[in-house]
Amino acid sequence: MTGLPPVLLLGIDTPIGLCVMRELGRHGVPVFGIGKTARSIGAASRYCTQFHVRGKGPLKDWLPALVEKTGAAALMAISEGDLIQLADMPEQIGPCRVLTPRRAALDLVLDKERTLALAREWGIETPVNYTGTPDRWPVVLKWADPMQVQPALEAAGISFLKAEIVHSAAQLEKSLARYASLGIKPLVQSYASGRGLGRMFYRHKGETTLFFQHERLHEWPPEGGVSTMCQSLPASLHQQRKARSEAFLNKIGWEGPAMIEYRYDPVTKQFVLMEINGRFWGSLPLASSAGAEFGWEHYRRHILGETKDAPAWKAGIRARYMIPETRRLIKLFAARSAHVDPHARLRRWQSLWRWLSGFLDPKMHYYVFATDDPGPFFRDMANIIRSIVPLDKVFPADRVRHQSSESRPHNKLG
Image (cartoon, rainbow, N blue to C red; front, side):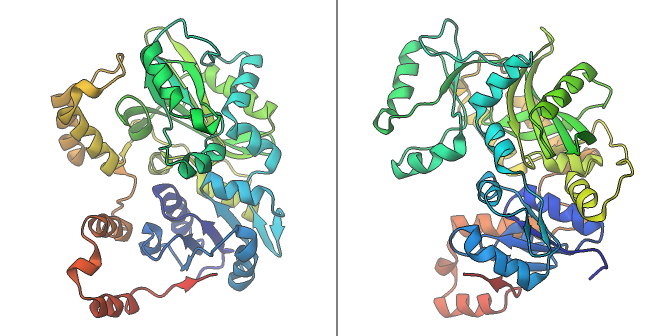
C-alpha cells in the first residue's frame, strides 16, 4: 500500500476498466476494483489491490456502504449505465469524491439526436437525419439514446444493433418493421464514407489538459462498429478540427474525459461527426500504450491537484483487440459476400498477413495482454474456455466447489 489515496473503480470487467486500473496502479495508486463476478478480468490484475463483487440492485443501495468500508478517496466508473446512476447521486459520498459527469451534461452527450443538432448549430458537419424516404443509399440506422432503448429491446427479445447499414427502401421498411410493436424506431441517417477518426480530450476547468487522436484501421463488424485495431496519429494533424472540437466541448460545458468520433474521408477531406462518448472509450488501451494516460490524468488533477502538463505521447503506436479482430478476419474469409459496406476495401489475404505480422510488430500493443500484467489475459482465456466447455462438464460438482474455495479472496456485496 502506497501513500497515495485509494480509488474505487466500478467496472473492471472490460479492457477499458482494466486499462484505467493499470494506469493508476503503475503510478502507485491503490485500486479497489468492482466487477460483476469473481471471474472479472480486472480481478486477475496485479494492480488490483482489493476486489469486490458488485452488489445487487441500484448503486445507491450498496455503494455508500462499500465506500465507507474501503475508505476510498475517489470513485471512478466505466459504463454508461453506472454513470447514469451516479449522476443522480451526490458528488461526494463521505470523504470519497465521485469523479463522474453530472446529469445535464451527461444527458446531452447520451442523446445522439440532441448532440448532432447542437453540433450543426455550431457549424460541425453531421449525418443527415431522414424523416421520409432517403434520397441516397446506403443509410445507417442508429438509436438516439442507446441506453434508454436497450431494456425495451431486451424485454421484447429484439437484438440491440449499434449501427445497421441499409441499402434500399425495401430493406429499410423491413428493418423498421422489426421495432413496430414497440412504438419506437431508430434514427435513419446518411452514410458517411471514410475511416473512423477519434479525438480524445481531458477537460479540466474549461481547459484541455490532455489531447490524443487516433484512426481506426479495423472494425467489428467489418462494415463499421467497434474498433478492433487502431493507430495513434501525430498531434500536429488536423489542428483546425481539434480547435473546433474543443470549442464544441466548451460550449456544452463538458468536464473530464470525452472522445469525439468523426468519419474522415481522405479523398474529399470531409469530417462528419458521429457521436460524443462522455466517458472512457473502447480504444483507451491504445491511448495508454502511446503515453496518453487519461485515467491517471483524471486522478492526478482531481485528487492530487497537480497542474503540470502531461507528457507527450507517441504517434505510430498500434493496438488491437484480439478476439473481435480474429472474428473480423474469419468473417472476411467465410462470408465475404455478406459485407454490405460498398466503400470498404476488404482484401482477405492482406488482412490475414496483417493479422499474422502484427505479432512481430514492435509497435503493436493489445487491449488485454500486457507483459507486466499477464493475469487478465489468462483469466480472459479461461473465461472463453469456460463459456465453450462448462466447468461442471469437466469436473465433478464437489471438485468445482473445492476449486472455488481456493480462488483469490474477494468481498461480495449485497
